[in-house]
Image (cartoon, rainbow over all chains, first blue to last red; front, top):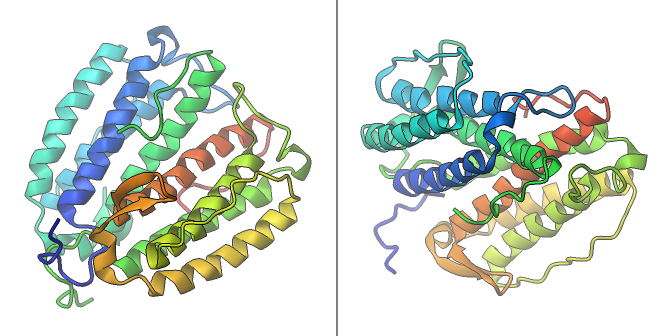
Length: 160
Length: 160
């Protein structure tokens, strides 16, 4: 494999980062699929939110973050309606395509600029994007506990 | 802020990635600190591991991964001894310094090379490193559930 085309001060390229993120999103999709439909918006532990609410939050952050980074349009929907598991999965797949399309439109220098996401969260674009990915991993990990507590084996964490 | 010194195909630089990781490690440290000492290796949900075991796993991955990427020495300790919370925190702080030292020694092109971590996990170095960070976020998220179930308020996720 040639690595000579990669610039000297690169931990990861935008293309590899998108692939990494979409790998996480495939795993989260498998968790949503594995979650009993009738527990998605009812089951919780420790007084926390349901996994359905967390999944809706993920959807409200991923594409809206990418769109904001591309265009400065920071609109998103924070309403947390309860929809069926199939509808979440449908929106998930839609977001997968939108994310791919939007990502290509981000000028590479943009990742290093200071932005204010959603009108209230300042940071460099790469940190704001990592926050969205990390938030997904964080809440998915909580979904793993919910699923185990429900007696369901979650998908393997290492499989993307 | 000038961004002109950043090469064109960079999502994030090695220096910014280390800072991002250490931010996560500071949050995980706060979670370990908040966890009741007498529950660290006893409390669990859904038949899962204790948070103490997860924290010991994080320690067995972070510095050993960085050392392996630097030197090809993939030795690590997978024994999961039960130590006190103070001892975990002591090892955590030690690892923080070691990680900073090792990171500086990673030649930037190394992040894009294919390696076999710990003699058994193949991948590009950046993906292997992200796996360690993601694994920490994943299990820390589970620690958040444990802590809530124990009636303890976890530190805020967004604070690094």
